[in-house]
Image (cartoon, rainbow over all chains, first blue to last red; front, side, top):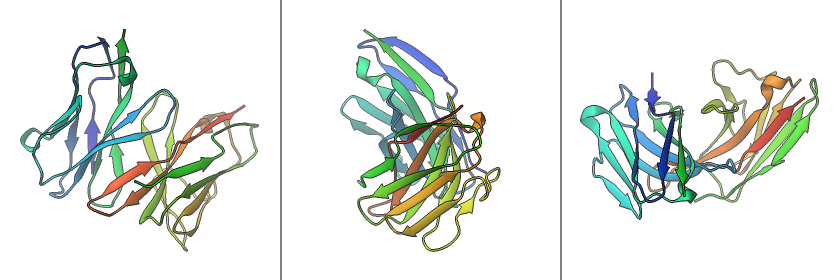
Length: 113
Length: 115
């Protein structure tokens, strides 16, 4: 069975601070994908990144960066120099055998001006 | 990436009635799914919409309550039947494009309130 844990339910920061969102996953499959999605207050789910289990390279996209550590089953997400527009709920998700996404509980990020 | 639209975007319905939600994609996709997001919660998969055959439901969801159709590769509907206030949620259509790896996208959602 697949499981995704986002231990932080809510994080509050002041603008320009960095914020790191933790994601820990469980799966017995050797081939899997990990995702991060952003859900702003408007409700739509925005795809941020996909990483497959064979690619442990960290990735940076603008102010976003992701740290994939297979040894600790973690796929953490960092927002550098946060902005008010980053306020949203962020979901980590796992796709393994069966082609079904398993979502974590989500982390609400509140960036205060 | 696929562009997904859902209708209606939101609705307020009376207890005991049914609502059909439509999902339209601008290109043919490999797989389509329906998810539910209850207030303040994460997303839960309701079912996989199979083209030309019955949907595959997850544990806890049944066809009588959530009938799904997928007549072609770009369109699907989800009906929420005999609604109760517990059905108040956001319902999201999701599609997979298996090109250059596996990418899964979500529609804008349908915000349903049952009174």
